[in-house]
Length: 126
Image (cartoon, rainbow, N blue to C red):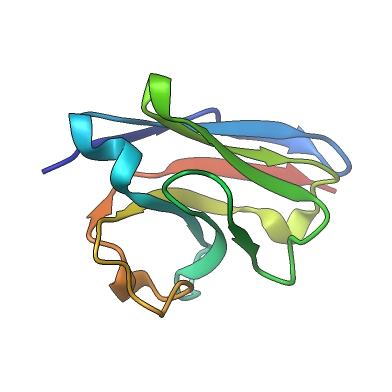
């Protein structure tokens, strides 16, 4: 069992930046692939980014590629999402999620992830 706690959300103007953090409990964090998802009101939860357990492989949704960066610090049991050049359409609740081994193939599907945080609100004003 692992618990995930997101932080770093807030209100920012378009073009601005935010860094989200997701702190995990438990010693197994370094073996988990980690993902970020987001959900806007009235919309389904959508994939944002994923990072492998060792940080060597990353994957991004086309909508955030080139603007967002996912990275992790296994010594601190934390995964981050650096968000630059934010747009109003990035407004959503952002969730981090853990995918323990054995890792599946559906990297962008919420069902692939076993553990979820409570979410943090990101609001981008125009």
